[in-house]
Image (cartoon, rainbow, N blue to C red; front, side, top):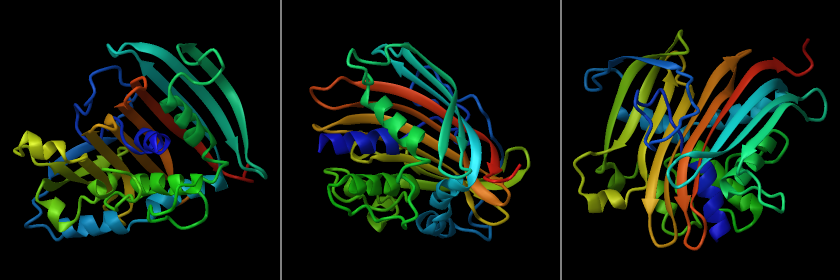
Length: 320
């Protein structure tokens, strides 16, 4: 069960997001994400606007295009630059990993390392990673393109059993379907259902007009915990903020930011994650994934890490 909690907390929560807040650094330390992609234009008065909160909530809950964007990577060749940093208890960088990888999908998937650098406290004496966060980063983001993390099967409901496939189903639910319950995770499962009638009383909803990547008109829809809640009430809420970026022209989801924080006798975590998309040949594909997170399980070493993944130079496999 602890392994499952680690997988879910490390990989499905968190980062710093520039389409979120200008000072979106919730965890005070080095931030590898310096790519600014969105400019806020104005706050939209939802009472006088043709769109309303329910339109955005329904779009978030029912969207499948965000998930399909990861599947579509298999039709493209691209370059991935991955930067990962680990920290000591004083949030000083003590480990660095940098990978620049060419992914080729002309036939069987191939990865070619263009640059591979490791410095600091990255590995144990036995050659394994020091932190489980790094191990899961390596498994999910280094191998996602050739593994069944993004299979052709439809997105699950998070109810699968205790197999590896069941764990991946829970991961996919948290990343690609925020607002749905995640079954089989103690003390967390129902806390992800932030759009139920009972949970809505704890959140404020707002949306603003913005420009994404200098040219794409978007809405930024924000679901944030009400600031005047008591500390007792707030301590029982796991998702502190969910920000979704919608393309105004077609209502496609181009970005998602999640801020999660929770503590009980089994685990303690504070994480933020941001995923952004862009268009290539009319396909929507991932371009940036960033993460900031601290998490701790009793009798285990506290883990502090951040990473930035950038995908670029997408080209359809087989094209010149």
